[in-house]
Each structure stands twice: as C-alpha cells, then as structure tokens.
Image (cartoon, rainbow, N blue to C red; front, side, top):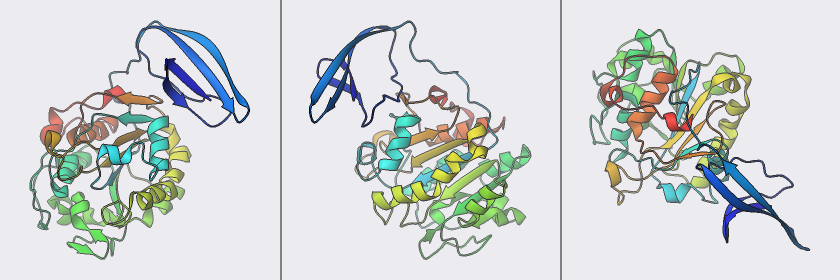
Length: 320
C-alpha cells in the first residue's frame, strides 16, 4: 500500500493493511492517491488533503530525565539512510526524527567527539591520550546536580582511562579525557557497556548516558550490518522501557563522514533523534552539527550553562 502525492511520486510505501505513518506537508491542498496492490492487481482511491498550517515545532527542547547519545563511525549520510544494511536504524529514522542536514565538524574522529562533549575540536590527533582541563559537559552536569555515565563496550575495567584495549578505543570515549573525570572519583562512572542493561533493569540509569559501541560494533572496523544488529539488540530494549517512554531522548549520530567529504568540516552524516516527545516522522532540513547535539542534551536535562560553542549553538528544536 502506498500514498502518491504527485503523478508517479510515491511518498510513502508500507507492506501491510494500514498506512501507519505521518507525512510532513506545507500548507496547501494536495490531490493524493492511495493505492493498494497485490499479486492480483491494484485499486486506487483519490483523496484531497487540505493542510491549513505547515508542520511546526514547539520551538523548545522538551525536558527529560534521561538523555542518551550513541555514536557510530565513519560513514556518510547516503551510506546509512536508505541502506539495506541498516534496517533497524532506518526504521527509527522513519518513525521518529531525522536530521537530513547534519554535518560533522572535522576529520578525523577525535575532534568530533570533543565537539559533542566540550563544544570545541581541541585536537585532530587521533593518537592523543593525555588528560585535558578544557571545559566540558561533565563539569556542567555536576554543577547542575545531574548524574552521568559513559557506557563503553569492551572497556577493560571500571574507571579505566588508558588509551585502549582490544576493541576499545579511548578516542571514542571522550569523557575519559577530562580532568574532571580522570583526576577524581568521577572516573568510576566510566563503566563497561555490560553495566547498561543492569542499570536499565534496576531503574538506575543516570541523567546523561554516553554510549560507546566497540570498534567492531560502531562500523569503524566492523560492517554497517553489525552496527545495526548491535543497536537492535542493545538499544531496542531501552526504547521500549517505561523509563524511556516517559520522557527519554536518544540521539544516534555518526561521528564523521568519509575523508573525501569535507562539507562543513567533517561531511554529511546521519543523525536520528528518538523519543516520545520527538515529532513523529519528522525530517528536519535545519543545518545541525555536533555542538547542536551537545546543546540539545544539556538543555533537555535543564542545564543552563554550556561549554565551548554549545553556548551559542541552538538546540535541535525542529525535531520536537
């Protein structure tokens, strides 16, 4: 079954007996055709749709008790969105919010992770491993009385701040760099991802969760298919939980595009925003980058001061 909004333009298609979707249309009158087909043929039903006002956002970031950021690796927007290798992520992009004009800030990876957490690139040296004193999200979360954890797959031990081990890479776990964490007991909020399902089951999730799949499961060394399977296995239970369905916000974003794509610094990447307060089926055309993710996460948690360029960046309001 499908909806045609213009001759030969199939706006939406689904396998099933109902059209369970939203179409975002500007104000105006649309002469549409709903077509149902099977092996025996098809039927068409004409339908006129009048939209008195275009799809609009609330203009604000909704408050949330739990914000989650999951970062995937090194693929362009066109490699991800619409890809048969990532059916689960694409199903989320269809059901919830997709930032169609989202661009990474730099190449290679590490500077993008710092932009997401400190509001500045800091370094483009992917081998950097030292402790940083730069302003960062943890400093502001603690000042605001908020809790946080970094859940990193293959992290060898709680509080580990070393450069890497096996399929774990510190460069993909930016909170481990900051002095607020590494030089204090806050480092014990750096935990292996195996702790995540336990915290979910025990209603012990922090306000802010930074989630780091390992190198095989974030599409860095592994495939997009493996990354998608990891998301379906590990993130689907979060989305369906009562904790998340109350007011959760989940952002799944790729750190950078291909090295040949330098648009806006780091190239065109996929960013999917999920939650009960996200506008269903929204495809935002607003230009966003990693500092906007940082601002969105912090605003949602009620934090009123922001590190680096997050201070002047906007929240991703078009998706709510």
